[in-house]
Structure formats: structure tokens, C-alpha cells
Length: 187
Image 1 (tube, rainbow, N blue to C red):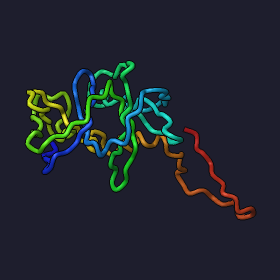
Image 2 (cartoon, helix red, strand yellow):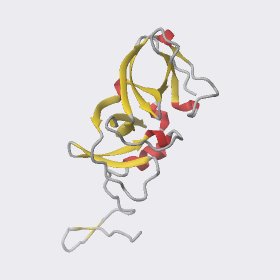
Image 3 (cartoon, helix red, strand yellow):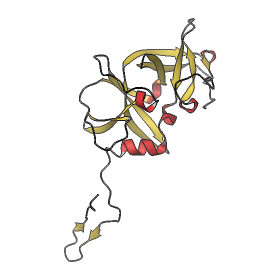
């Protein structure tokens, strides 16, 4: 479980998954896109909805509800993709997160962020930064640590959808022509 608490007010973008409100740190959110054409890719994990074209880049779309152990998201006119950057070592990987709807941008003071409970949440405690108390209400929003929701292997699996296929061995160069020769082994 992540026990860091912010020392200054922080902004979060809230969104809805399976009727519950979650939030991400606003600095990780790059943009919000209306759900449109997502192309399914055979052989991907069940939590990968497919890929979409973001200004010429192929971006994987994660069905966050499935990843968190809930039923798959049902598409509606409010469905959208939250484009985020996830940390992978020293690199940042762009992913789309499917959400049922967008909530609001909220600013939470340090005292409004409580540690997540060790029981009773529908998701793994390591996925949470904490629980944010919204205003003077008794309502809490689960603050996701998106860098921990997907493991390194899962980020690599999702980002491999957009990476070129790499040869297992370096390509050979034909000495007579200087042309690079590569072969693709059957799968």
C-alpha cells in the first residue's frame, strides 16, 4: 500500500467505473477523448480493450474496470478514454483508460486525503494513493496510483501492441550487397 500523502493541495480528475468514483492525479492525465473506434487485438489480456489512433500514434486502451476485478465496462454515450502516462522505469508510456464517465477536477488539501483502509475496498491496496474526502460531505473518492495499477510486465504487454516486432537475433547483412536481411520465425 502506498502511504505517501501530499504535503500541499493536489488536483485530481475523477471518473466513474461500475458506479463508483475514482480519481487520478491531474498531472498524469494528458487528455480526455470521447470513446470512438477502438480496434480489438487478438491474443491480448482481457483487460486490454484494444488500440486507437491518437494523432497518428497507436495507443492501447485498458478497461480499468476489468483490471480492477470488476465486470467489463458497458459502453454508453458518456464513455470516454482518459489518456495517461504511466511510469515504466525511467520511461513514460502513454495508455488510454476506458471509463464509464468523467466526474470533475477536484483539489484536495493534505488533510482531506486519508490512507486507504486495509479491508473493504474492491481493489488491491497497492493500487491506491489514499481516499480523498470530497468537500464537507461524508463521501470518499478512491485515489488511484496508476503507476502501480499495472505491473511492469502488464505495461510492457500493453505497450507492445504499438511497438514494431523485434527480431530475436540482430539482422544479418548480406556481404555481397550490404542489404540487411531479416527473417521472421513462424509463431
